[in-house]
Image (cartoon, rainbow, N blue to C red; front, top):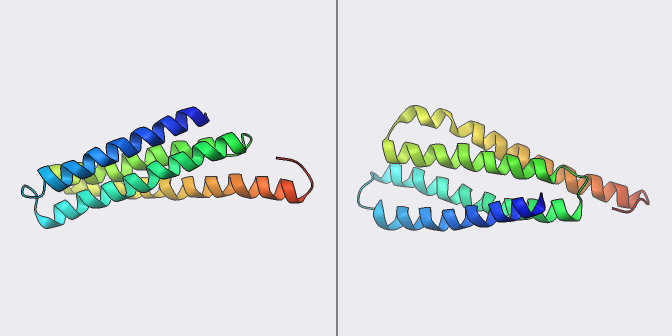
Length: 132
């Protein structure tokens, strides 16, 4: 699982760089400022969660019994739903796509909760005298 998450995080970061460059260079003169801002928000959260995938990969390797794999899947879903819907909204102008964005936000939140749970349960097991 940790290798899959690490590869996913690395590829998500690569895609984030490509999309950021695309937005900055190809879309700057083609999109209205508010739509360009929407696209940039998608790139920003995409990048945050590419790094979150790398953290989930580390956690899955460090604490294999935890929920780090679930966190990784939630981060991937969040990138797709949150950032993906913002990219499509910015490029197409179809406003109802914004209704999908909060589901991606919820996936991000749940992913961070799962990652925190993984670390918390490992820590409490250690403080109780059980090795992790």
